[in-house]
Amino acid sequence: MHPPRTSRLRLREMSMADLDDMAALLGDSTVMEFYPAPKNRDEAAAWIDWNMRNYAEHGFGLWIAETYDGEFIGDCGLSWQTVNGAPHLEVGFHVRVAAQGKGFATEAALACRDHARDLGVAQHLVAIIHQANRASQRVAEKLGMRRDPSLRHTSPIHEVYSLVLSSTSPTEAGRDE
Ligand SMILES: CC(C)(COP(=O)(O)OP(=O)(O)OC[C@H]1O[C@@H](n2cnc3c(N)ncnc32)[C@H](O)[C@@H]1OP(=O)(O)O)[C@@H](O)C(=O)NCCC(=O)NCCS
Image 1 (spheres, rainbow, N blue to C red):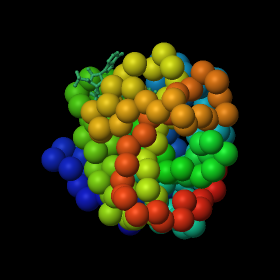
Image 2: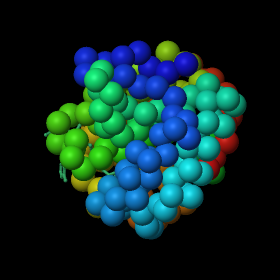
Image 3: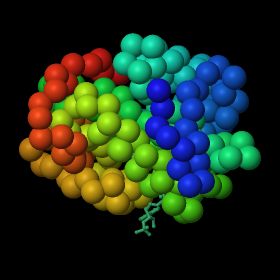
């Protein structure tokens, strides 16, 4: 199951057939500016494998975002991450440099936010964002998320943005990676 199509994008499960695109995306030093280092091809393959395991285990992961004519835009989706020592549902996104600044991350992430609400597996949606990553913070803000200083990731240079998905309390039981 993946989010429904948006006005310009479809989101679909990634597979090893996407390795060239994903290795180019995650190997780009600009895209990975706020990560410890760009990923090499093996690490990009591990990223795809992690998402494929998440589709099988949880029914969601990060999906490939592409235009209707098949242009690769990046990835966007949902995963379990540890915040305050407990599993929290996170929305994540990466857009290749040539496609940035066109609203694609916001468009894909809005669809993932709404999908997260429909799934009903978590009370909150979070985004764990490097304190200097203004573009990502802005995407989170446009989703309606706000920085919550009471929520902490293990990394001291990351802040946690959060939004309430549901007033009821489903079991936030997942797996962190
Ligand atoms: C974060 C990222 C996904 C945004 O992708 P995008 O498609 O360019 O984002 P959008 O076009 O939807 O823009 C969202 C907002 O961010 C703003 N923005 C984009 N780059 C910005 C920057 N460097 N500084 C400040 N604001 C920025 C845009 O202006 C827009 O806000 P606005 O509508 O108020 O003008 C993209 O920059 C990226 O892939 N970064 C590297 C990977 C990454 O950091 N991922 C997130 C990990 S937490």
